[in-house]
Length: 302
Image (cartoon, rainbow, N blue to C red; front, side):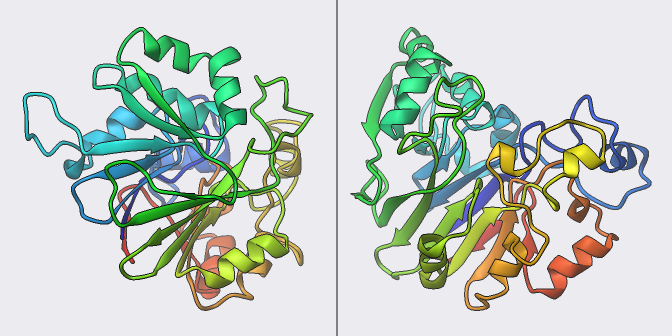
């Protein structure tokens, strides 16, 4: 299995277009050592010919331009993206679908809950039906999913705690399927990727998935729960937004340190997170724990 990180930042990217926090302003001025990042998405393949796009960010066209395998040029119009799989219906994971409207019908895999939101409340699917068309296929939690034109990979959706998008009527009325993580297995090697870019709680079911995985790509959105409040950017906590902060005795970093076997990589990193500053003590703490921080264009072979 090959994995490419297309985007490693949370919604808004890094630097965020309208943000003047220490990280964003420092990167623009050149006073902070770090790298720019686009909004969260990965792609996976078993044969380097057909790829599954996991989440379609608003930065997708930029990401594709830097990803040569996306266009193998076998015909006058061509793409190696065989399917798109969404782990939720958040705008930063679904708006990029509209950028694929010039091609063939999209093979789109979502849960029923996400499909409802994309039909009625952020109507991406009805819009695409007027352009390229959509072949929707349901993701059922805890069921093995074989994706068309992607031989050698099996996907399993794990329901996780989280929030429906702010535009959804289910924002404060959780439904099964609002948020999922993915266990992706290479059927030839048996190696497993566990992908969870949004995670509100690290419970026993998540611990079991991390323990059996060979590579874990997991929510690194915020360093502390009140990060936005402390930086006078907003009034919401990480937990209000469906994210478990990294720091603290019960934070995600402490949980990951209990599992030294898999390769552990933080994804979906918010522009305010101090780990984006490569000289920060928080960055050194993560690296000392043997945990990696994803960057755009990062490639992993499993």
